[in-house]
Image (cartoon, rainbow, N blue to C red):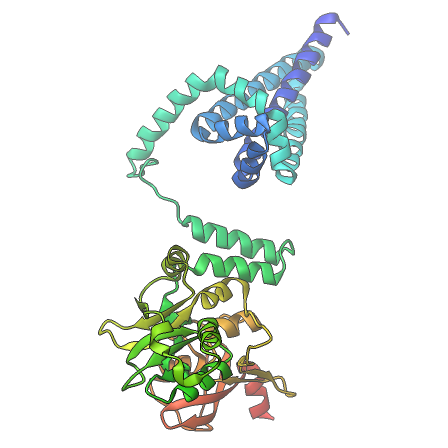
Length: 429
């Protein structure tokens, strides 16, 4: 073989290496995680900064890489065809077609792209200088090509500048968390906590508040010793005080302030003026988002607020702990009373108190019952049936069989839930 042939083969090999770099660079740059690159950039990785800079100019980058890749592929195929024509005559065209197709598909497409998909960030960091050179060389051509593409797309009513992403950043992050959990990269507790954090701006105070029917409060008109005894017996550190009617809240008393006042008067209950040591109640609308309420708690350095509806009527109370529990799950301490209200039966069914929040049940059992129209499981049954069911009535919806076990006046207090298919099998037998 002559020296010219060896030089041609060498040039083809160099072009294949460039094709490998162009293909791998394109895949790694488009598949790299911006979050991981940002973390590396914050840690002082200069190449991560370069990759971020290139990704921010994705149109120009991708265009330059595609132009360069097609250029070297076409040139390599042309040289291979010329070489094989010289060696084998007219049949060299067929040989060149087969050989270059196999070589380009394996070494310039599958191999680099598979490598780049497996380790996109690492690959992108390694080829960042090459990508910068490609943008510098083919950037002007890429800009011209992008301009032509935009004109052609505009003929079909497509504007790349106006089109918005299908998913919001919150939805994209939520989807990433779900995928990581499904693939085993994140445990359920971490997924739930991240989901709870993302839900704060969607949920309202009314979704997590303690309803007024479950509120513990103290009648300030009772004798001082009765008021003190009731507050000290409560598992809560803050108690609403009412006068005249239970929804007329006139103050909020902290147990620590009460103990301090008792110490100052030698534990003489009759000398304690509860209203003087109580703080002014803070009322918030029931439509306040949890994100806004959390920020308000932090600004005011407060832990407790009373919730009112649009007419100013008392609906319940919300605490900082209620919001934090939406993120981290149930927080229990030595003074908490067990009010979970969910019990697994030996037959596999779940017995649930009607007041159990749907979100808590979904989180505990990994269910997907809707919570847009109702907050509690009893509210879901009433919403779906458009009635207040009688005891022993059963309904099937959302893939579950709901059986009303107990009703007190107009309140559903206990429900049995089992999978709908399981309930159907039991009925058939």
